[in-house]
Every structure is written in structure tokens, then in C-alpha cells.
Length: 490
Ligand code: NDP
Image 1 (cartoon, rainbow, N blue to C red):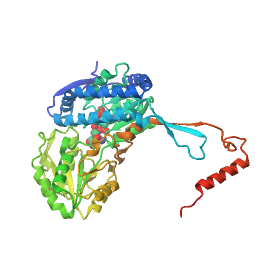
Image 2: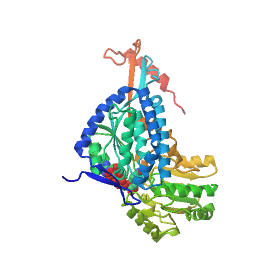
Image 3: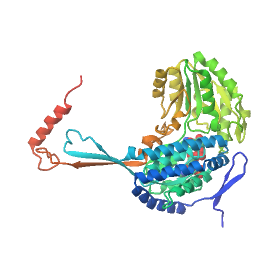
Image 4: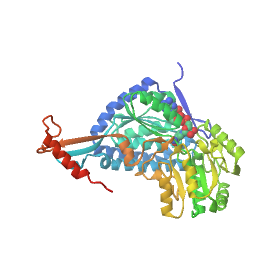
């Protein structure tokens, strides 16, 4: 019989971490069938019991924190410390989703307005059913759990297809969930390659797909979903800009810039990839950055490139950038697969691949700008629009720039800080995708609004939705509407 398994490999050592089944479309079909039944049970369990179970799951994950961090370390190559941080952030999101689901989604009365005076109206957000989560490898716990935790809290069942590079973590997350919810398979993981994910996205019983990965694959997933009108939330990475204004704390900015760009070997969807520094502080900032970068080493401060094929993309961007720009740190020799040392290049043309395409590696381009306004224009001239950073001591000015940045999230005087605030929605615009995970928006993303209007009494002389309606009723309506809405504002 042909082998129906695949191996997950430690990218740092090349050793096999474990083998996992390549689940066939039939196996995926069966998992979705089980999930449909589990979804009905989970939804009927009610918000208070779901909250209790999810908080228990949080405790189970916390008790297995070291084991999970080690597994993440083995499958991605990232340092155990970084894997631990990823897990800690995941726990805070799970906690927030569990504690806030009822408040955000529960039934509430809404105002009915003058014309609906005789009505009582309620709004609530009901579960969708089965949610498919297709996850990436760069943050194999934090990123998929940003969908899974919120979708579970909203009352849905999950079928999770982890990246083929990090299947073990995905399997373990679902296994541990069964300690808190043993009755039904409310959270299942299916392992395999791209075809397994494709079968999952194409299943008509899946009511929403939460996808994280490349823009190209998101389009394929969306095309498959179109067949069944299955909605998707797509988180597709970015080309985030880091703006340093004239009054910024340059030491803090250089420190944050370096970490935001190089941590996790740059394999962060909201990682820093483009840096724009205003002319007045350009030389000083470059000095701060150059001093610090000499102390950062691949293999010591961050791990290897997790996906072997990504090394070629990073190499192509470095070659391109160093040909046209001026090297501040590193260069083509920084690529010693699977590791890549930090690379910083200045004055790379804005239309070059290193500035336009997602690199997903420990490299940045730096450009001098006339002022913050020009920096913002260049930052916004990207097909992507996920996150971004502003460094400035002027809080009002920084907030203004942040609001004008064409992205879903912006950090001020820190990097990536928004991802650690569970109440803030996370997602992008343009090629970075659409829809939101995290926060109240993230809970509503995995629920359908249910609107109910109940007539409390018949409105005397105003029975508008009847064939018995006469001209006098219509006349009264027109008088009322003119009174309510007919006053001009000029
Ligand atoms: P992909 O977009 O190809 O994969 C993301 C997920 O989708 C994986 O679980 C993958 O499974 C799955 N998948 C692949 N093909 C299909 C399909 N036809 N239908 C359904 N699911 C599918 O990303 P890669 O891992 O190949 O990385 C490529 C690039 O994407 C990176 O270089 C980076 O630029 C970007 N990326 C962005 C991320 C982010 O955080 N936004 C995360 C990861 C990557 P499998 O792994 O088995 O192929």
C-alpha cells in the first residue's frame, strides 16, 4: 500500500519530528459530518457552560505550556522563549473570547424608532455551525487560535487544517481540547497537504472558512468557497511600514524596528518590512540601527527559515535590494540556509520586489523621506495593508498619522502591540485580506445576526402593512415623516 503519511521536519536540524496521516477528501468529509453534530450540541450547551469549558481548556493549555512550546520550537525552529510568548498571548485571547462572548453576542433589545413605536425588537448573534480553520506555520498556535478560540466562544464547532509544516501542534491543540470537552468532537484537526485543505474549503456543510496564508492561496480558497457561497475571513500577510518622525525617541525606535523586523526570522505577517525615516533624524536613526544590528544573530536571537522554499524568495529580494540600494548590514552572504542573518539596505527603489512583495524574512529596506507626510504616502502605496508602526513623541500627531495609515492596525511607539490586546480586531485591507479575528468583531465574524421584531399592539389608524390601508393613513404617515425627517440642515 502506498504511504498515506507525511513527516513534519525540524527545520533547524532536518530531523523528523513526527509522521501524520494525509487525510483524504473522504476523511475530511467524515470529520465535517461529525463536526455538524457536535456543533448542534455545543450551540445547545449555552453560553455559560461554553464559557466554563473554554476557561477550563485555557487552564489545560497553561498546564501544557512547556510541552506545547517545545513542540512549536521543534516544528518551526523558533526559540522556545518565542514559542512560550506565542502561547501566553494565545491564552489571553482565549480568556477574552470566553469571557466576552455572551456580552457581545447575547440577545439585547434595540430601539425601534417612532414609526416602529408599537414594536419590540431584539438582536442576537447565533452560531454558524461548522467553521473550517486553515492555518499557517509561522505562529502555529497564536494565529489559528485567533480564529478557533473566537469561533468556539461564538458557539461553533471547528475543523482545523494546520499547515503541513506544523501538523503536530495542530493535532495536540485539538487533543487537549477533548480534556475539557470530552462528549463530542467540537474541535477536530485534520492533517495533510494542500489537497486536505482544499477538500475542507469545498465542503458545503462548512459555514465559514478562516484562512491565514498567502494572497495567492486565499484566492484559490475563495474560489472553492464561491461554489457554495461559503463566506471566508482571509488574513494574507503584509508589507508593513515603520515610520520614524522627527521627534521620535530614536534609540527606542531602532530597538523596536529591529525586533519587529528580525524576530521570528521576519516570518511575521505584521513584521516590519519597510522603514521610512524623516530627513531631520535619518543619519542618527541609521547610526542607532547599525549599532544594534551587529549584535543580532540568526540561530541565537531567532531561528531558521521554517519553510525551505521561502529561502529562495528572501535571497531574491536581498539580491535585488543590494544591487540597487546601499547595504547597511548583511548582504547576499547573510543567507546560509536554513538561517538568514539580518539584512538592512537603504535607498532601494520603491518599485522593486524587495519593497513591493512580502519578503517574510529578516530583511528591511530603509528610505529617507522629506517629512512624515511623505513617509505616510509611501507607506500607503502598497497593495498590502495589514499593520504598521509610527514612532513620534507627539501623541496627537502620531494618532493622526496612525489613522491615515492604510492598514487594519497601527502601533505607536511600540511594534505589533495591537496583536496582544484581545479587544482589538485584527485583519487587513487590500491584498492583506478582509474580515477580522480578535475582539468583538472577531466574535461577530463567526456568528450570524438574528433580528426579531414583535408587534406589541396594533397602531390605531396606522395599519400600513395591510391591503385595508386607506389614503388617510398614508396622509398621516407622510405628515409624521415630514415632521421627523423633513427639516433641512443648511
Ligand atoms: P499557503 O498560503 O500556501 O498556505 C497556507 C495554508 O493553506 C496552509 O495550511 C496550506 O496547507 C493551506 N493550503 C494550501 N493550498 C490550499 C488549497 N488549495 N486549499 C485550501 N488550503 C490550502 O502559504 P505557504 O505556507 O506556502 O507560504 C507561502 C507564503 O505565504 C509565505 O512565503 C508568506 O509570504 C505567506 N504566508 C503568510 C502568512 C501570514 O501570517 N499571513 C502565514 C504563512 C505564509 P499546506 O501547508 O499543507 O500546503
